Image (cartoon, rainbow, N blue to C red; front, side, top):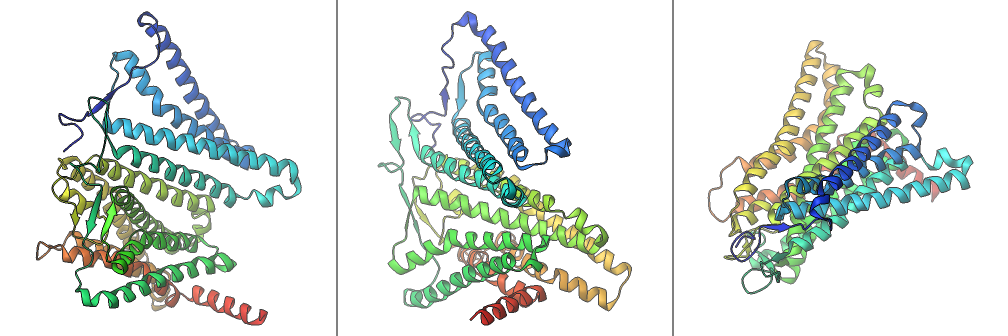
Length: 486
């Protein structure tokens, strides 16, 4: 049953400001002027900080982000309010209301964290002036801003998911999804394995998950401790390792717990959260692999300009852009999924809450969801994959211009690890979405899902450590350092 049927509303009515009808025009002009001044003023701040090198300091770095957040924060509510005053229409659709709530909380939270970061910056500047440049490094400033976004996103998402778990009927009575007409949980059928084999597969998947976590943590540790690995390629690799840990952790612990306890249930809120973070880290993987392909393209095709093109700011921008785009893509799917209802069946033929499986299970109209999957999937999966192919096409053309065994070996050494990871990641996706299934039980989908949620993240550390001399050298250096210290 959809929220827009006869029993539940599809929109809300905003009564607006408590002002008299004859004063609407005056207040409309006042609020429009205030909004335009706010937008133009903050844009001016951002432009001045961007253009004047004297303002490229931590304080103004935070200020530019605060100015952008203030524009976004006001833009969540002011345009809708002004439009309602102008058209005398106070309605807002259900999806628009949920989205407005999310972004209001998101930018409100970022405002708070940025003001805290600016207070810390002023504390260091006044109380530790001699160490100011060391403490307030560019890396720390970017980390504080990224953390502000991540923490605010998580907080806003929790509130939005809990809000979307409610239904609003015409008599203003709140109806939980867990009542007699809808489900409060889903049943995950898990992997297509026999009961007597559960113990063996549990041990296998537990070992794979622990290998994924420990292997990728080792990569992050090596890159952090060895200054020779402080390059753009390993900067992206450290983020990819963190993403692989997170990606596997979205599904593996719940799957292992279900196998151990023989319990297959997952709550509605837990299922929606799992969908969000699964999509988020899957998209982030795709964007990071694309950034690494661009890095390899610049290293081979423009080696003399490599340090100029792949500057620290560009690397941070690519990673930040990856996080923001992944966050937006996952949020769109999650909000649309939260609008669906499930009446007929709550059994998922999967070991985690897969978006496509949930859409097939829904009793609502899923046309919009399927259209968004096609559009967003093209942007976050197909387009990055095309960019990777173009990058390696240009790399191949550059090598063939002056073919030599040494050049080919160097290119393979530079790109071999990344190509292997790309092949595993996109190979699993192609196998899932482009190879037709032979039966209706979705066993193939479940098996392929195991490949890209457990196997691929587990193999990445081995690929980069066994095929990469720098990583092996860093590991040997750390082991020798530990041996000598003992």
